[in-house]
Amino acid sequence: MSWLRGLRIRLVITFVLVGGLSAVGAAGLTYYEVRANLLGGVQDRLLKDFRNRMLLLSRDVALPADDEELALLAEDLEVGDREVYVVRDGAIPSDARITAELRARVQRRPELAWQRVTRDGVPYLVGGSRVMLLAGGTPSGITVYLVESLAQAASDEATVLRAAQAAPLPALLLAVLAGLLAARGVLRPVADLDHAARRLGEGRLETRLPVRGGDELARLAGRFNETAAALERSVGELREMEARSRRFVADVSHELRTPLAAATAVTDVLEAGADRLDADAGTAARLVTSEIARLTKLVDDLMEISRFDAGAAQLNLDVVDVGAAVAACLRSRGWMADVTTDLPPDIRVPLDPRRLDVIVANLVGNALRHGAPPVTVRVRATGQAVTVEVADHGPGLPADVLPHVFERFYKADAARARSEGSGLGLAIARENALLHGGDLTVTPEAVFTLTLPRNHPAEEPPLRTTPPGNRP
Image (cartoon, rainbow, N blue to C red; front, top):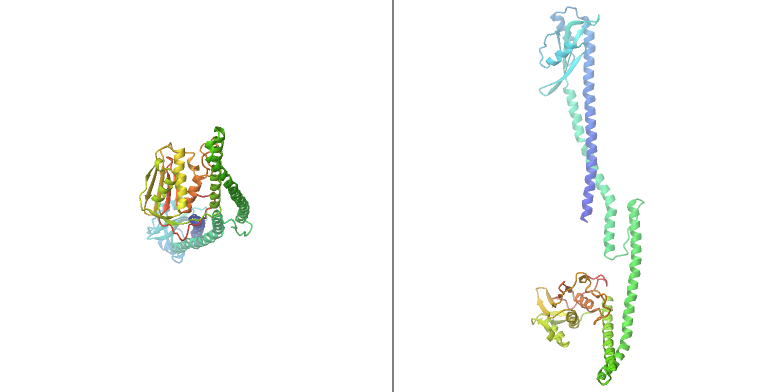
């Protein structure tokens, strides 16, 4: 489920980024808009008030004005914290905040000129204008300057800035909350779908999803339920067909055993007297005996494999000396002279002796029939397991044959319609290995290795939970 956690984190991050960028952008635009309107409004108000007062009061000034008249005009123009300087044209006021640049602009134009100046961290609005005579609009020879503090406007601007900086925080919190809610609402159905798909993959075909609403996720849940129902029906039909097939094989094998027993008794008599028959009759008697024996082996193997498929195969465990059991298997079949052995004594393992005999007989018999001498059988013990290795010096197994070695009735040579065995020997050998809780493997060099656990619990044989046909 780690991918769901990662998706949830990415979704929350996306909401935070979108919400945060939107909030920051909105706050920034608001700040710049309010700042521009705030400063612009203050400046326009101050300059308009100064212009009107200057036009009104300068009418009472007698020309040419002396220093006392200029001082009185400056005093009348001062309002609140505003500082006013009235000088003759071209004179330089004593205030350093009135720059040479502003004085030059004032001398070049008849309108009011202004600029912002910052001194010691305090912003000021500095303006100036020549006083014009009403008659003809000619200069009166008097220039008026004002210096007014914008500290209050700067304080208001700082307040707006702090508000703009704090505004994104609630938006970010809301974005995180919205992201969590959206992640829960969107990803919960996805998590349910993931869990249901896992259950379905584990073979729980009855798994269904609740369908809520009518959105895309609800339609996806409905489609999942339809697919699961169809799969359940198909698998049920396949299981029923497989069960019928297993019953058919078991029934046919069982029904064949009685006539085969009678036929075997007859062929034993024929084989005993084959030497007294003429050549053709003797050959026919031996052929019938061989085919009856082969058919009997096939029926026995079919019954054995059907017991594995039905889960009816049981272990009769006993503590067995593996080396001695392998030697007994080889001796009973007359293979000791044909096989090189390495069988250390006293390697004891809890196992079913009959099934070990079946495994070793199939492996050695297969090596003798299809491999090249010498055939070697080795028993080895490790900390937790015992291995029985059967190898020959033949050409090995082709790459396309190797994955199918343990399949039932598989023939490496498709043109070879018949073989000496039933075609089930290696499949039965591996089933017996798995029944013990072990395994049977093969290498490209045709080295078969049986692995058996050393501490198999004799009281509780391993349960066969893997469906037939899907074993590793």
